[in-house]
Image (cartoon, rainbow, N blue to C red; front, side, top):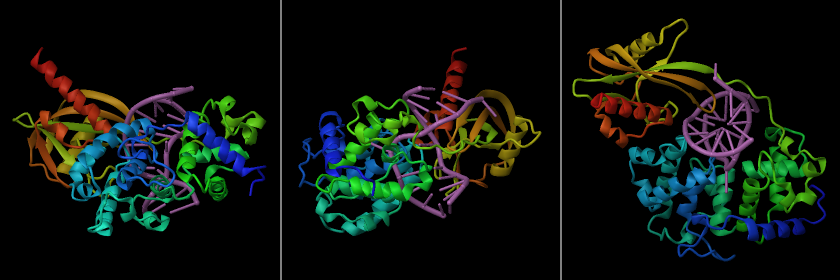
Length: 383
DNA sequence: AAATCGTGGTT
DNA sequence: TAACCAAGATT
C-alpha cells in the first residue's frame, strides 16, 4: 500500500500520544467499576451500542448527556426492546437524525431474541463479528467496527469523519472523499494495530478531534507530523478536497397554533413516511407561490386537519436550517371556527394544555414555538 | 450513487 | 437567507 517506512513505528507513536493526550474518561469505554480495561478484557456491549449510534454525525460532548439519560431510562437492551416508540423519541428529542432512534429500537428487539436467556451483562453472550452487526438496523461498517473494537478489542478498521480527514491529509488524497473511500478503508485497515485495536481506533478519533481538526489543525504537536503529506505541502486545511457547495432550498412555512375554548393547543404526530417520523408538531405547511402566509395556514389546516380557522395574531417568526433545506417559520395564533380535527396527513391529532407539551417529543424548530407560547401566556397573565 | 436525514457549535 | 460541518446509514 502506501510506502511508509515503518507502520509499526507509526502505531507506536500514535499510541504513545494517546497515552498522554487521549480522552480516557469516556464512560462506555471504562469497566463498570470505572477502571481502564486491560488488553484482554471485554466491555459491556449495550452501553457501547447506544453510544456508537448516538455518535453518528454527532460530537462526543453533545452525546454525553443524552447517553447518561438514556442509560438511566433504558438501562439494559431488554428495557429498550420493551419500551414504547413514544419513550424512545422523548429520550432522543433534540439529538437529531431521529431515524437512528427507531433503528436502535428495532435492533434492540432483534438482540433480545439473539440473547435469549443468556447473561446480557456478559460480553461473551453478544455477537462479536462484523457481519452480524452490520445486518442490524442502523449499524453500518463504521459503527460495527467501533462496537467490535471497543467491546471485544477485536481488530476491525473503521472510517469515520475523523479518520477520513486524518488519512486524506496523511496521503494527500487528491480525490474527493466519496471517490477515495476504497483507498482510505484499505489504509485504515493497514494501519490498524492488530495488538491494540481498541486503543488504536480511539487514538485515531481523538487525534482527529483534538489535533487533526478540520480547521486550524495543530500539526506542531501531531505524532504523525513527519509522515504527513499535507503537512509537508503546508496546506493540511485543504484536505480532504471538498466538493462544490450548493445553496440550500429555501421555503416559508406557515404554522397555526390553534387554541380551543379550554386553552388547549392542537398538535399532530408525523407519519412513518416523513422525516422525524413519530415526532409531534404544530400543524402548518409550505407557502405557495404568490400566497400570503396567513392564507397558507388556513389552507394547510383545512387540507391536513379538515378544520376552518381564523388567523388572529403573528406570535413569532424565525429561521431554522435542516441538513438539506432552510426554512423560515411564521407562527400564528389561531382560533377554531369550525370542524373537528382529523389526521388527514398525520398519525393522530391531539388537544393538549400548553403545560403538558413537555410530555411530547418535538423537533427543535417546534421547541422554539413552545418557548414562544409560554412567553405569550405569561405576558397575557401579567399585562 | 447521489440525495436524504437534525442539531448545535465554530469560524 | 452565513457557511461549514461533526464518532454515518440508508435507499
